[in-house]
Image (tube, rainbow, N blue to C red; front, side, top):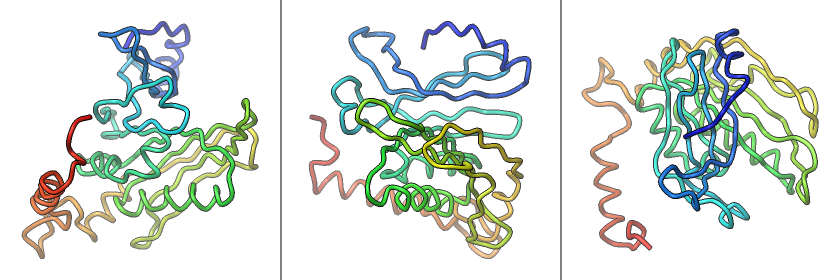
Amino acid sequence: MSMELSNMSLTRQFNVYVIFGLPEKDTADPDIFYNSAAVVGPDGIIGSYAKIVPTGLEVKWCKKGKKPFCFDTPWGLIGVGICYDTYMFPELPRFYAALGARLYVHITALDSFPGWKEYYYNQLQARAVENMMFVASSNLAGKESSSDFQGNSLILGPGRNNHDIRYFARALSENNEDIVMATIDLAEADRVRQDYPLFIRHPSSREPDWNLKLFREMLETIDEKTNLGKSD
């Protein structure tokens, strides 16, 4: 990824990480673009995540990304996803969680449609409870061309009770730009994962609940019996 960021010094000054969306040109082929999320930290550009599953009008201008992207911080791994990747493909945040990530950052441009709010909240809650991880979601707000984005950015994650998902911060109003901030304790994810050993060996069992061997065999069966794994 190549980009000039005049405000990169701000991440260094305030010791913060910034994730933001942008069209990204393929370094090997300038005619290929991706819908990407750039990640910048206190030491500069860390990398980018290219949306794996573009949808809708996106397919007219961008190609599919080729791999997940997570980055290390003093607080551990953080995984990144974009919009449809998160809502319809739980494999992505689960991949990050299995590697040890306790926080998943989701940037999205979710338009208004009947039932959009239930869809938005329910899918993000599901990703959090499936993996016992925190989810920070940033949604566009306001009208843009024929779209009407509703905002409602939020931070949610494990609560004090097992399988309880708590909202740590939500936007104050719909359809308006807002700043959502919260202080979270990522160790809560570790605590809950001890009670529900999705990815770790528990003293009372020999294997994690998420049986990697079994799911690998299931994927191989799908590959053998369907054309889903075949290239176009």
